[in-house]
Length: 250
Image (tube, rainbow, N blue to C red; front, side, top):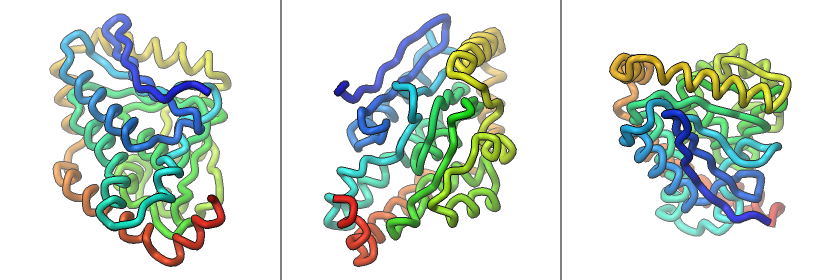
């Protein structure tokens, strides 16, 4: 088993941020915190003009929050901290002054869909289906919902949130605006990500910064909003319904 990590590699002015966890890239709080910090630092690094967000491994982009941590939540304060993990990463991506390109090589669930939605330009493979499974255990995609709604629209977000047992195809995600392109292989995806990122590095950095402000207009309240959403999830995870559901996963 490989150890979890977050790493940053700079190649030709592109900052490649990669996260990994052996449990299908499900992310515990410490890795989420490191990821948020790495994104913020890359945004402040003058050696980087464009950022690529990717995950390690071949199969799953991100399986969401760590289930091992979820089942051990016993009070609302701990619950809010737990669910704030993805909120902090999304807000770091939102505030980052540089374009973030998403590279989604495989399935993504829950918080992972939120990460994909918070990128500025996201490409994927034909294996990159998406699912919001939170309602299955008595909570909901409250924290990641604003990012997904912003990118895919309320109708599409509502559909996949309610149909919590279904993986939706990459083509659905592309049609709804989550992905810009869907490729037949990881190799083709990686080549497209590299080409796109390096070409963006030839653009005016000031113009890209101003465009990013346009893209994220109307989200200045998200620090407060996502904290409130995290508190909602932290309360619901303590419900009798959720506790009973989680017993089946222990």
